[in-house]
Each structure stands twice: as structure tokens, then as C-alpha cells.
Amino acid sequence: MRIFLITIGLCGVTIAAEHLAPLTSSFGQPQHQRTSMTASITNPTAKAAIEALNAQDRKAWDALFAPDATFADDGNEGSLSNFTNGAFGKGRERFTRIDKVEHDGLHVYGQLHSDSWGDFKVYFKFHVADGYITRLEVGQSNH
Image (cartoon, rainbow, N blue to C red; front, side, top):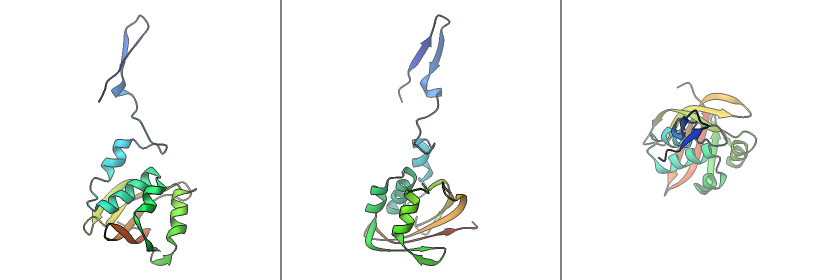
């Protein structure tokens, strides 16, 4: 980490840049928090998906899914495309906290923030084959 010193005027006030606010994403979450938040997710595909969602990187998210991937929301079959459009569109969804990870890193539970719906506890359950997500199940959680 580089530390820049700024001296102001003749009074010798010095500010070390490391004490200033960290560089944040457009969602107010420091870069180091976005990556450390996903440290407990051991499955690389699920981890990449959560990181893509949190970074609002639609291209990275889309690249993780098999062409015929399926989707369910609270147990109801739905459209992965519609979910993705909402999560990366007006909803700008992202995890603000990961509470637990289970099933070899494929089931992620945490707090999600949506600009459309607010904050709530959720689960994301990934089904992965050959490095691609073949099914995503999401829903509200009581964890």
C-alpha cells in the first residue's frame, strides 16, 4: 500500500492517505470488503457469481451460466433472464453480508440489498456442472 503525505499550509498538518476513506464501488462498498466477504465461498463458480452480482458486472455473471440454465424463486419456477434483468437493472441487487455457506460452497445465505425491494435475508443455491451454473435457486431465508 502506498502512503501519500499531504502537508497543508505552514502549520504542518499532515494527513496520511491510508487514514482517508477507502476507495469504494458505486454501491458504497470498499473493494477489499467485496472480496473478503466472499472468502468463505469455496466453490469458485458460486464465488464468481456472487462477486459479479456485487460488482454489478453483468457480462461476468452471464458468462457463468450454461445456455439452458434453469431458475427458481422461492420454489417457483421462473425466468433466469427476468431475475438477471431485475438484479442488474433497476434493482441493483447485491449481498451486504454473507452469513453462512453450505453444501461444498454452493449454498450461500446472507443479507441482500435491492434498490427496489430493500434489505432481506436470502439464499442462493447454485447447481454447477463443468464450471457452469446449470440451475440457480433463490429465495427469502430464515437463517
